[in-house]
Image (cartoon, rainbow over all chains, first blue to last red):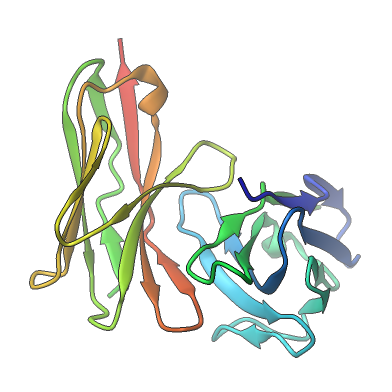
Length: 116
Length: 110
């Protein structure tokens, strides 16, 4: 089956630093990738939709200057949490839509971010 | 009101029991629905799609009632390995946007 990887799996950083998370589709091309965030005991919340070769579309309440998204190729999207603060600590999950199977979304294993 | 609502549980059931979860959605434009399973500290994984005609996959049966905007998941003969959080998910529009419920936690016990 289709595989999506995320790197790193977890990261601990100091407040004020920036953290980059990579999402890769390993055996298919993804024109669209999605970034979610999940706080403990809450549902996954869509943060933004990442489109290859164009600007990301952010959901209401998500700061685009805080969460920078780059989708430079059909297999890679990155999310950078700039100047991270403790309230940004969360589980960040990406998913990718197979270009050839538009009804599908495959999820990455997630990145757990802890900001001290 | 949340777009997809679920009872968070937890539901504690003995091994071998039959358990049902319900979910309601508020967006009548939602086109398709899914049940995902999420284990603790892991990403969600697709369990099954949900069709109006009802569909079954082994011990799992899903049902959609568009008139009532209601979705259900039935698990028969529960196994310890079924312990997880079950997420009700709606899919809307050509943008392939998924909306997740908060999930229902199931704990299957000996």
